[in-house]
Image (cartoon, rainbow, N blue to C red):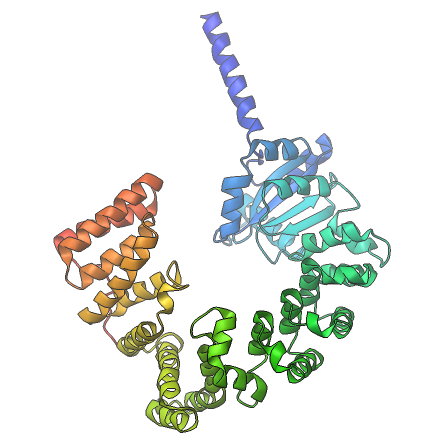
Amino acid sequence: MMKRLTVILAIIIIGATASHAQGISFEPGQNWGEVLSKAKTEHKYIFIDCYASWCGPCKAMAADIFPLKEVGEAYNKAFISIKMRMDLPQPPDSEDGNSINWIWYRNIKDIEEQYSINGYPAFMFLDPNGKPVHKVIGYLDKAAFIQLAADAQNPDKQYYTIVKNFRPNTLDTADEKGLIRLFANSDTALAGRIAQDYLTRIPTNQLNIRGTRYLMVQFQHIPAVLAIAENYIQKLPKADLPKEGNAYLIEALHKYPQFNAVAQAYIKDLSEKELYNKNVIEFVAHFTETTDDKKGFSLFYLHSARVNAVMGQKGYAEGEARRIITNTLVEPSIKTTKKVNITPNFDSLQNVVAKKYGAKYAKDLMYGPKMGWYQYLVFNKNQSKYWPNFIAAKIAAYQRFRIDTIYNADGGLNSICWAFFQHGTDKRQLLIAAGWMKEVNEKHPNYSTYIDTYACLLYKAGLVDFAIRTETLALQVEKKDSPNGQQFVYLQNTIDKMKKGEPIWDEKEYQ
């Protein structure tokens, strides 16, 4: 009996040790005083996981990062770790004011207010005496989160130490680059000051690096950073302006007159030979907004075949010409009708465009604005009676331009077709959408969400047996991936409703 008891105790001890080694060991209970006392006694820092119940990245950290053995090894030896749910509901008042839940709630609110917890997940670190030393906001992968444990104990990396002591020309620029990324979410002001110092001190040839250009865009609100970007652009050789990285910088900053002026001057001076280059055409397209931008508009409107040949894309030039004409003639008219709350006269608009740019352009131009108008009524004005109009306009546009099968099939088209299923009533329209989803599923045969959309469209269109077989296929796919998940349960319930002939869509009437 004694031997058996010894074995049991050994198993318990080994199991407890193994469990403790797997991931971060968070303190149970809700007593801030005990946490502070324990940290001081054990000479450990305090790590606080500040999370919200609705926060997806918080859940991902808890599920994927905190339980890792390597993470536990980095944190358990140096920190007293606790969790604080920042959106904890306020507890009922207690008569004596000593409710432990109420005290914990106040502790959370104090942490939130004192340390400006304004994003989640937020990771707070305090020294053994309870003094804040470090703060970082946002999801981190395993390597970054383990590095965070070291940074929190390093005065040269600690957020609050840097805030207090930061002076220009004192840190190594390599360290500054890392600190900018580290504090970009938790303190943009500090990150901006470090970025300004970094961009001022690095050699000019390093301004041409992708990450450096991104910093100039990210901190463009700082006058000194904007001046650095302007100086960099002004000194570029003309031929380098439309190159991908430089074009990105100019486009991102074109709201500032000095950058827009550089772009317009460059376009004005382009020779015909220089125009027909892929980077140049993309650059010109970005800075051609209306037909008043004559050189750019002429390029796309009058020389479409040559532009399409350079771009290797059928219809590229015509699409840009439609956009420019829409910006010039159509959008201003629609904005006016929105202000006075009347429906645009699309026939009249089409006639105006036809007189200036031809019947074909006029007809093609109306697809997008009609679709956009009814989308505005449905989503912005909540006028659900216009769902049939929106669906019809969307189908017409997709059938004309087929953008659904080019680049939007794997996500956006599924969302659109689901909306058609929820709100459509016309069997022909439902079958058209089902045809789109059939093409999507041929590309993605193992994605249950897409198969489900296809099945639901078939069911609402009246093809019940086909819909049940299709939904069963979605269930089989989901069973392989996540047999106990919510999607599996939903699919099973949907099949049951289909077999009973019950509605599976929103039954609300059009208003």
